[in-house]
Image (cartoon, rainbow, N blue to C red; front, side):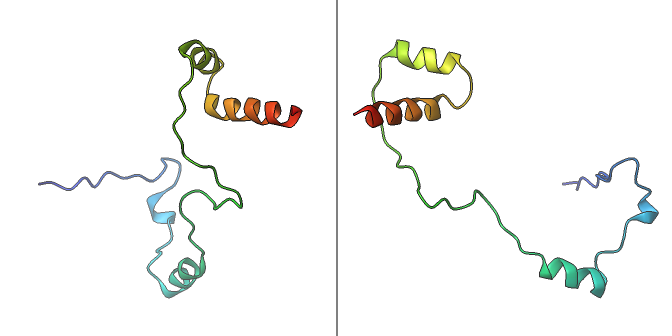
Length: 83
């Protein structure tokens, strides 16, 4: 098996200008940098559920583009607020 060693540095950067990040100076900076992965934790999370809706309702929300599930959620919140 061969290893792909493609140069991923941007073409406008001279490889000789790239700092050596294995030096103690850079290791100290890298180690002190906080790492956060994934989505941030929200104070109020959503609950995953299954709901059966008419096909025409789903089609109309999907036709409006991305975030169609969030828009359904917003419409339901507005309806609940009316009372």
